[in-house]
Length: 200
Image (cartoon, rainbow, N blue to C red; front, side, top):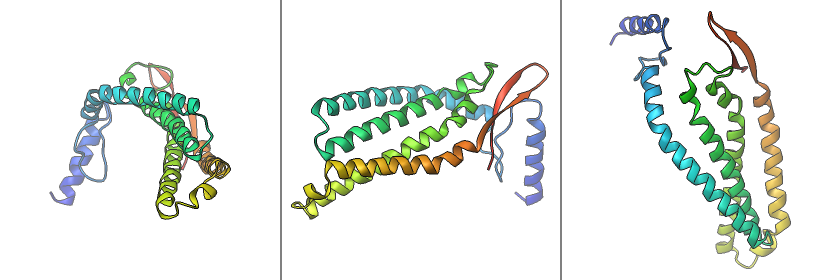
């Protein structure tokens, strides 16, 4: 397709979607329309909800198990922290999976905007999962390479300090992104709702 034909097709898509839902338009022709995307998302959402529910229950069980075992070893501290971070991450994904189910509900705030407003929580805990997984992998590698030194290097205090440092780092680096998101009031001839604006 020539560039002029492509631009004309994109322009017609924009005009066609002016009176209905918007069409997902990128720099090229869209693969699917916004309605098709919503249909696909609604079909996949039950599976995502089931997987997230299973993940939350599994992580809660892991948290209780490691707590009962006691946080006396560095491995238990790492796995306990990983279970908490993973449970929070999966909870955020579970909340995001409901967003399109309320697309036409005319609530005061759209679920998609709520998930955008709280998406920084997901990225925060997702990054914490990556950091803690790195600590666990590094400890396991040192067990193989330096088996006699691992207990002296990876102590309870060391693991706690590393996780606390990562927690502070993720909080400090994530705050500017959170401040860049703010709610604003929008309206049409029938409804008034709250949109979320991302200031970049």
